[in-house]
Image (cartoon, rainbow, N blue to C red; front, side):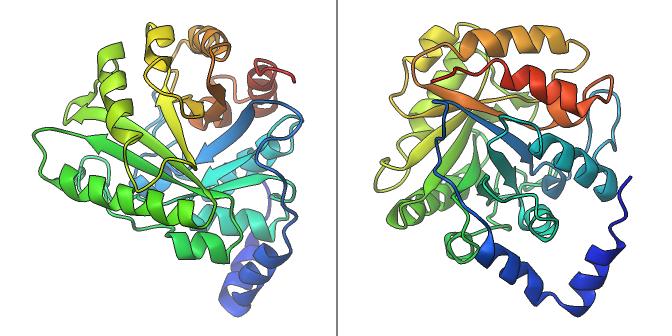
Length: 287
């Protein structure tokens, strides 16, 4: 594992170097040589969701997570990162985000398993900080639960964030789920309902992208929107080959603009991060 004690020293003695690193980061267009993106997601820890497969604290070591993220981001064809400020800042100091798309994760207040989980507060990035740190957009989780009063506050906050990001010309990445305490509704009908609500948030959808799971009948699901859509990788459990096959098929559908994958690539069953990332990149369309 890498030795990150120098980052701890910078954070303690020279925290201004984080903003300095953000100010000089080399940026790139959202879409590059391909028509599809490969984004590595690492915002799960901030919601207390540390498990992968049968390992409940797999993401509990920040040192190990940074090692895995650096490996993934360095692979050819990886376009960028989706993460909370703490992780983005570590990677800025490490120089790992030059020429990458960086999407800031915004609402992480709906801690996994909490009584207030569906009142998903914006406790990480806001639009002002995304602009200040020269990021390329913001992502928000939007769980819609008909029996959870906290959903109303979440919908309102997400709508405001979509409008503010659009006002700055930045991507608003909305991740909608039709949900309940027992989990998300991952039927095609449930995902279509979630898309319908999510894409209507804000005063404009001009800069809105969707992030949705791969479910059955994705052809019908993708007919529910005209917005650019990224596929959520999720935790493939003990059947990564089946997950990859489903991703590969869905990536060929009109409107699908790539993958946002975290745990499946950062913590594959054989722990070969580079090979897992390369397999996913190879699925993307080449312009």
